Amino acid sequence: MGKMWPELRSSSVIRRYNGGEPVLSKKDIPYDADCIFNAGVTKDRDRYVMVFRNDHGFDGKSSFEKCDIGIAFSDDGIHWDVQDKPFITAEDMHDPEITRVYDPRLTVIEDRCYICFAVDTKHGIRGGIGVTDDFRSLKVLSLTVPDNRNMVLFPEKIDGKFVRLERPFPVYSRGGKDRFDIWMSKSPDLKYWGESELVLGVEDVPFANDKIGPGAPPIKTEAGWLTIFHTVDIDSTRGKNGWEEKWQKRYCAGVMLLDLKDPSKVIGMYKEPLMAPETEYETEGGFRTNVIFPGAAIPEEDGRVKIYYGASDTVECMATADIKDLIALCR
Image 1 (cartoon, rainbow, N blue to C red):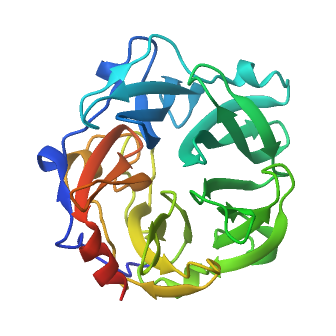
Image 2 (image 1 turned 90 degrees about the vertical axis):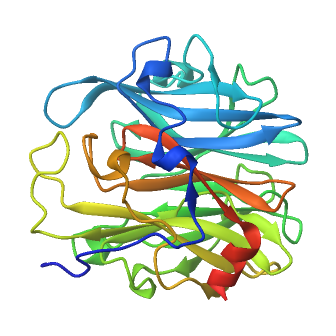
């Protein structure tokens, strides 16, 4: 597959914090850390809470010895107080099948904080949901069968049920390659899930040719559920990008509106990237360059949304946009 989009640009409504400088990186972590990214963020009363992925023990080629989830707190959403040890490790799962835990997302529902996460196991990748009431321990409520990940919860029940977006990745039935889409499932109790429906196919996104998936948990607005997702295009001419011998993918962020009553229905979508890799931290020097991965969108009282995203699978960054502008893009 040759070049399809030689250049993609972020929407003009996006304002990167401090020109794209990270808000969290390995220098901020008081224990072993190489890559700090793909964080989930929420507000707990007047403070921000971030849970972040930490890959460490790089083998010099393409993988890391360990991957765990750290936690940090902030008064302003920019300067973070990282706790002195990881929040969740593979050992905390108390399951010998599980080898890594990563990619957390946070959603507060009825004053309880829920964490969606992924785990690598000896027999496939599973998506998990847990709950914490103290930000020190996690109670796991459910794990999917392989292969599923990138799960995010809606911040309230819809028609009496919990709802999540997810990204199963069926290779065999999709031609033996990446063709991954965004799905939705419902649950009465966060343990048993069903009523699954397709929300958005990769073929429906003009700037994706490889896969798409959930990013940040949706935000409820009068216009619909404002939903920031991730997209991937692949270009065989890209060659070496980052620390690996070959990295040919580019990750961007998209934005769409889902129907308030039936969020399986897309009622509006911006046909161009909300965010595309542009800054130094997004395009140069990182583990896998040309990557923007949104994991959180926090609506503020002033009408802005703080968008937290991993850059080049190496650092965590933040951008802002006016919520009215985001809705207008979708329309």
